[in-house]
Length: 296
Length: 264
Image 1: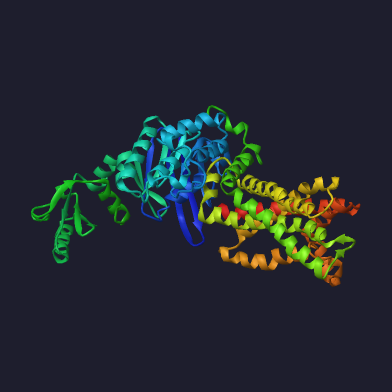
Image 2: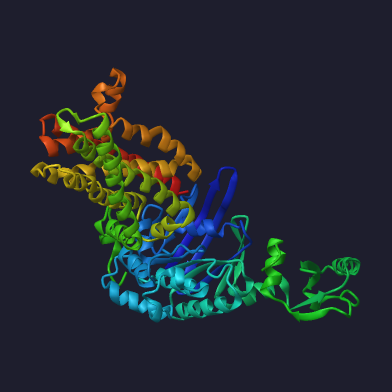
């Protein structure tokens, strides 16, 4: 059974169609990365799954429960880690966890809180107010709060957005631990590296629908080939190099101050200039080619 | 869910969900109760000194056979209730929804909007029923004789506060910006407590205003509190029924408004 099944889901906000005929299956036990630029419909999809948004069309099921009708039962079995920090800042770490243990009807609140404190490595700070925690500790607490009831399915909405690399790595370790225990994870992100590091499969979203899906290596092979050549040069030289590569049938994308010639292993003689830096094709190449957006 | 079957247990208005939300309020309240309690005790003392002793010493000795200090003191229960229910409900709900994203977190758990609103209203009702009694206790310190009927004051305050909490939640779900609460306060809250009969008898007001005042839940609360202090009348049963009806109507309006606000 799939943990999540979406069929033809549509969600509109006035004239804007945030989710546009979305089909998505998430098999049990995998981590699916929902990768897309801002406005692709990732967060709306998450809200549809928690019953906080109602679909205009389509069918949704989570953990065997029809949504939104049976959303409360589905939410009892899923954990949600939001994009925005919504902890109670004046309340202690321990109480933040205990409140959610009660909301999730956990029978032994004390034991669940202890376990979550260990997971977040916050046992020593259990009596501290959230306001006193560092940014990294708060994100770990937010994650532990979403896992307080040992959910079968975890929705991670941009779990590391806005965090510095060190904190991001700490969280990746926690999420990776969750994945290795067999918990189903749906993780929205617009960080390529996050999707590459954590996701068994990646679904690239744009304009409210999935435009490509597969394991990261499969997506790279399918859309970007083996190799990408990056050229760093003044704008005029970049324009010339782009024109030559495109005339050779190669796909070229912007890469910050440079351009990247994707699939450069297929280039004819002279299509890729000698000064180009050749590297293995990446998920970032796929993302930019598919969505037209610069990656983060 | 630790092996339990959630389908078997999840219904409307579950005590576990309501209790869980209220436990969050209690945990937060523990961090700020001192300030709230200090102001709720000091305020009636200041009012009684200013209005009660000040006016009774110069202009008004008694109203309807009751010393003015005691008249104002019993009336101030109503002002304590509206200020500890409607205002916290308005501002608290707005801040939790718009600035703290608290409701997003709660609604991601197995809690629905009806349970969330009910819990918020119940919490405010309990709190206001306690703070509502403070002016009465202060007035006893100013010479009001304790009466058995006063034991019903928390119940009267609770019913009234539920209604005004619902009103506050509904307003929070309606306004677009926090500044717009100024309109709500000026148009509803202030007039309601001024024509509640807390500071002067409404039977001295123009006939039209008297009719409107009868529809004012705060006026009914004032009459019930004075009934507890100076003797109940048969009509007080009707007054209490009116407060219960007010609470029920505001509850449904608050749930409906919040549903529209919280669920896209």
